[in-house]
Amino acid sequence: MNGLDVGWFTERPVGELRPGDHAWLAYATREEREHVIGDFVHDGLRNTEEKVVYVADSPPERLPGVRRLDDVTLRDRVRRRQLRVLSRAQTCLDRAGRFDPSRMVDVLAHEVDAAFDQEFRAVRVTTDFSWLLTAPGGGLTRMLSCEHLVAEAVSPSTTTMAICQVRRGARPPDELAALRDTHEVLVEANPEFDDGVLKIVRTFDPPGLRVEGELDAARHAAFSDRLARVSKGRLRTHLDLSRLRFVDLGGLSLLTRHACDLPGGSVLVLDELPPEVEDVIEMVGWHRLPGLVRGRPREA
Amino acid sequence: MTLEHRAFLYRGVEDFLRVTEPFLRAGARAGEAIVAVVREPGLSALRDSLSDLKGQVDFYDSDAFYRHPVRTLKQYHELVKAMAPRRVRALAEPVWHGWDAREAVEWARYESLINVVFGGVDALALCPYDRASLPEAVLDQARRTHPLLLDDGAAVRSDRYVDPAVFGDDCDRARRANGRPADAEYLPVESDLVPVRLFVGERAVRLGADERSARNLVTAVNEVVANALAHGCPPVGLWMWRDGPDVVCEVGDHGLWRPRPSSLTGFIPPCSALDRGFGLWTVRLLVDHMEVRAGWDGTFVRLYTACAGDADAGDRPAPGGAA
Image 1: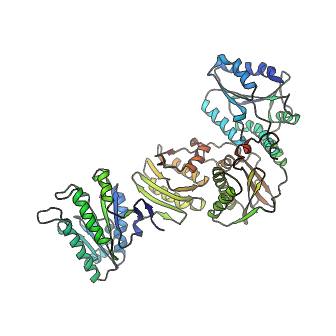
Image 2: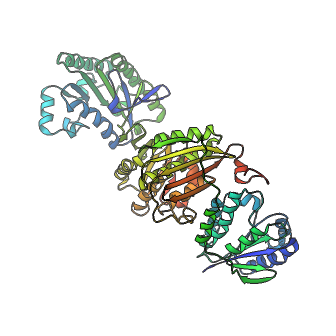
Image 3: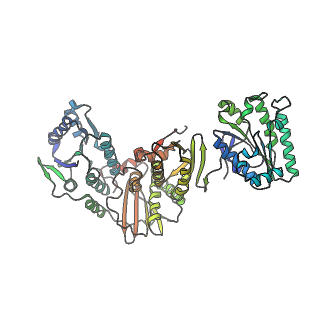
């Protein structure tokens, strides 16, 4: 399934990134980062054909995705130089400890060249830039020029894909938007379920699911299962229904049953209800769907 | 806590006011929640004579209130709920002109269903029937759907009253012949409902339904087909055609619906979406009319939706309108 175009960007699940993609992830929570970056890194390290370059100051075993490998596999991937965890100092700081974008691009280019010699099929590069936005020599302007350099290096590549991570709360929204605009791809979590009719995607801010397409009897079990997992222990689980085209009456009953089975006071919040679904709910009356509440209205 | 459901057979506005005005005033004195759903000219006359009770009586015009029996039942249900715990006193004059034969039967069934839906509610319902303008058959029906009568000034039990399930059976038997036209389009149904929704949505619009009605029909048919797949026997299929002002969709399977569905099936408003009857009740809300035939040859559910431009007429055709 192809990504959905949003303005200039392509939204793409992390599992569908391809070489040449210079992708952006503004994550809301650690959980979201673990989901997205974890899959990105793990997909690369699961087999032995791709190289992963992770710029971070943490030990490898604490990085998203790497955590999922057993000790033997991890040692093997490090030994083969398939997993490269590079410190900030090694990669993007000059001798005075200031951010140096051109150095970073050189180091990464070197890693990509090495991967080619090692006959890796692809290279996955990622780092969390949040710290840089306030670091000496960092800041928005420097970051923007750095992103342009990375874009120039990655976009024409037939082997390299990169995800630039930033914690959403790190900077004001307008600065994040300016940074985002230097990327062509917005990466998001892999769908929890997708059979071409119904697609279920985890959301993190607010926490819940995005339910896309059509929910009918053949898909109740799959949906119910994902809903149970995400709503566990949450007082408010949000369902983003902006891309829901159809829900059957059994689906409304399923949501209601689920909401009623949650511990007292917990609710399912229906965000961006499409008018056609709201129409049916209004007709039967919200009071017949206890535990479901109207959430964020649909954007005009 | 029971419902007092009484038909009031009157003749002329004066006779109407002589009974309804004190009926509503008694409610005001007792601090009850009062609703008056009345046809003109009675509505204006009653408003004038009760002008001193301003704010204590909710007035509705019957012509706007009685448009779709299942939705009207729901609306009363919600009114009663909103007024709880106060006792409800309702003056409820249905509309009997301008319906085709099928619709008239459904409104009679509606009067009978009141006894079931509000059977356990502490309420008084007085239903005026105008002897001067209504045919004898309608007055006769009133005696069969109301356990109590006010006839010629005498408050009596109706000895003609029948149980709503029995009355509903009679309504079902009164249906016209059930043939499908030769040009009805057929879609066999396997397990996947996606092609069903595409077929119904596309055909409904092509046959003349507006977008909203078509969408509601898709949701309704989807529910009925899902039931057939879950509880019926293959082959399951559906037919669509145009019948006068209506788009019709019939879903059939070869299963025996046992125990046989009661004639009350899908008419009683459920408390919530968790109740067993929620699906069929919502189907009845979504379309203009639904018929269930469960026989030895299988189970057939027929859904009617009024066409675009006839949307209003579908609810309330002009006198002498479509058959």
